[in-house]
Image (tube, rainbow, N blue to C red):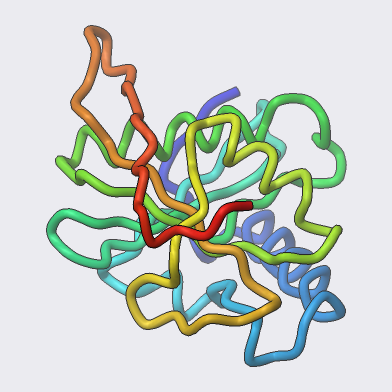
Amino acid sequence: MDIRIADLESPEVLALLREHLASLAPTAPAESRHALDLGGFRSPDVTFWGIWDGSVLAGFGALKQLTAAHVEVKSMRTAASHLRQGVASRMLRHLVREAVARGYSRLSLETGSMAFFEPARRLYASFGFVPCPPFDSYKADPNSVFMTMQLTGSAPGGSSRPKPLHDSAAPDR
């Protein structure tokens, strides 16, 4: 599988983005859904990657710069045809490495608190993300879970060594 910056006008990207947004609609009230739409992905502070299995779009993910030191994982999605094939792990590994390579020291994310998002929360925890208070412009919300990790340099070959951020203000979960 090949991960590369994706063309936001590609029919495959547009179709998977529509599927992504439609699947989130029933999970929470509109004010609690924080996925970016096409316009959000076009923002200059966002970089959007696709993961391709040959000519098939297997998934996508993005990073959004919050500050010079802090970046957010945005809108990761695996195509239904590629579920449970390691796509999300590959994309998240890529996003962590990219954040390290760009010199960020903190990587955070917001995801849902509902059962629908349990696989995502388990994936993030397996990478070293830990619960944290709301960050950037987010507000406390029972429909959201906030997670973060401290990034600590890069190992030879470009692999990152993420270290969880143990924030005493973070709730136990």
